[in-house]
Length: 432
Figure 1 (cartoon, rainbow, N blue to C red):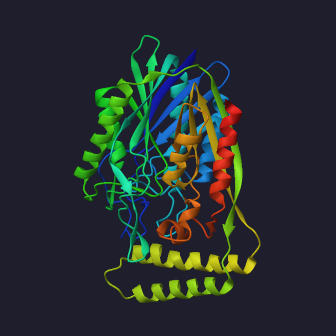
Figure 2: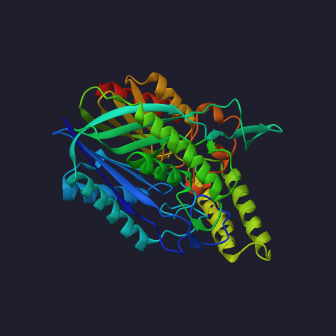
Figure 3: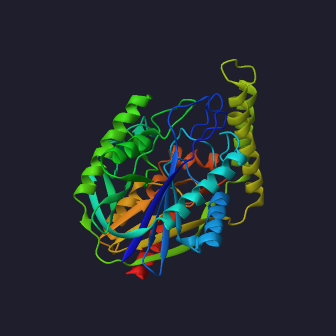
């Protein structure tokens, strides 16, 4: 029999922290609209323990992942690789990743964040009870594919025929007596409705509140939404509430119709893949530095650009371009470490990827996985940046040509898709 426990902690940062997700913000957070939470579910089959954490942050920096895992391994004995840390990817939360152009990380806040998450896992483990698990799925439309072809180029818009995953996956946790105590729910949609200076969990927060009010403790996990934006977008909290209510209602529906998982087996598999990076030629890199330097000069006297934005966005791009030139001159065959985590819970598998995965990865696993149902997640145990499919490279777009500059220095290559998919299927087969 599986034992399960769930707990939550408030992780709302103070006013004044740098916010994440958008480079063009005029300053740090000026208000708190709604509270941020981290929730932890601990499962134990008597031999294997697993901790699943969902938090209202954009993702977790690698050092935060390793720090949390080390603290839990030391205090509870749960192996670090058995801890899954997923960020909702809200663009209205604190910067807890080393993004270029998006403000500085607040180490004091991050220290408290890590200790609170460790505390949540401890409380969940200590409060575990005999439980039964069920899985359900329900349709929900709160998003669309955003890679629109317009005037011969890919822009962030709406691609009506583009791939999507318009559903929510749910794992309901009941006591041995059949009382629901937790609802884990996952869908794929960028929480980007807001671009303000107010802290918010965006639509995942509203969805979680709906689930809490109508069934049990919620735990939201973000799926493979690299090319999927929430929709409709109105830039208002009312829009977030509408999206969250739709998602919450679908989640409750799926939970109420969930079917008992077959088997009480828990297993975890972790593997690190070294993804090849694309190195530019020196001329290309030097042109990028010249452009970034010119842009910084252009905005120095622009009174519509705040000093904060000038320093973060424009000076930040100059910093990236300098590193880009160095990488070009250095050459070689650099790689990016990419941890794939698979968790076996009865006849359901959970796959965690540390990247902004295109939704095709989720659709692929839904079809190709050897498990009855596979829940695919992005933004898990870190985030290296966007992970497109190979067919996205020839046509370009923000996810291929621009976003990597905020994450690091170089973009991963088109060969990564096959490496990731092949490795994931091998890992899942090893668990069957």
